[in-house]
Image (cartoon, rainbow, N blue to C red):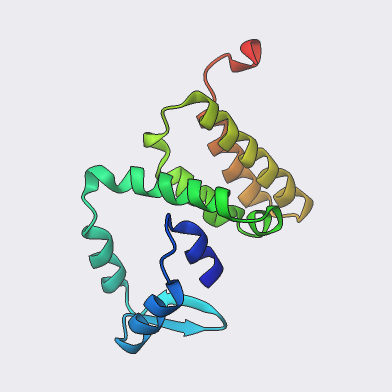
Length: 141
């Protein structure tokens, strides 16, 4: 989704031009406004270009950018994508306030998933949210 890609960047990178170039080169494919890598080997190769010591931090940055740049409705429509970025970046989350904010996002996603009858996703969201909280946090907060 072009909107998600644009929202995940830190700058005014022209995602449309980049996607057009990667489509032309056969690196990504497009179907129904969704973009995927043409093969898993492309995705794996690209991912390996990021030093493993930076992977978690890069996912955290993407999650932060998505939260900052998406509307509330877009965020609700993309909880899975946003929370997956935070989950992959969780070892880089050092600020307890940010951990609580992401846990609150997990709670919102859990409530929406339960409302929609998606109990498997709800379970994943609540598990991740609980992992972000400190022991005995209910006593302090």
